[in-house]
Amino acid sequence: MAAPPERRCWEREQARLKAGVVEQDTEEWQKDPNFTGLERVGGVDLSYIKGDDTSACASLVVLSYPALQVLYEDCRMVAVTAPYVAGFLAFREVPFLVEAVQRLQQEEPKLRPQVLLVDGNGLLHHRGFGVACHLGVLTDLPCIGVAKNLLQVDGLARDELHREQIRSLQRSGDTFPLTGTSGRVLGMVLRSYNNSSKPLYISVGHRVSLDTAVRLVRSCCRYRVPEPIRQADIRSREYIRKQLCAPLEARPARPESSKKEAELEDESDA
View (spheres, rainbow, N blue to C red):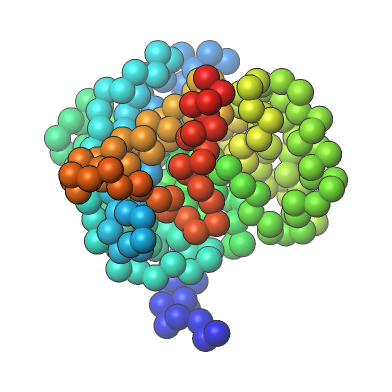
């Protein structure tokens, strides 16, 4: 199958933006063991109408920290025109998320999040520049990639060794590093919830270290999925149902994962 004409342009744009990624902590609150000074944590999500790859709801929520109460939400129906190409999801979804952050900045600047949690990968990516990096560079906000499935890059594989390492995660907070054949640590596998043996895959997006990213994600988990992402997902699908005035099931943004199943799992684990 021939590559879409956008691909070469997207590759150049990824390489250009990647130069702006900062892989270290840049904020004072990040350096504090208790994240003193952190008051607002954001989460973003895109949910698609079942059977329609072009109609979606873009959602941004901001939660208080550490209480994790929703302070702000913005849900908008959007028309998605860019094709889905593996490794280039950001070009399909990030523009709508950037617009949501810009609206927040204009309407409620005091509620601007100090960090964003993104349902997807950051440095754990084919070219080291996933959705969390892309959104972080364009908004200049600290961003963390939180994925529910392993992206198999740089020799990483869902093989028996990986499954054995997952089984070794006995309790909430247990981790192991994702080290590629290049020798680089691309992310961390985290068991985020005692009642779920399925881990999360944490990676740096922008302006945050991997250690800080893992600690913050863990502190935001009431269930398996961290609350900012979980609330963005729940609210985007509920918005779709209300807009269509019918009990339609919203489906996940990514063909290879199921947000619906993940949320149901979380709720049954509660």
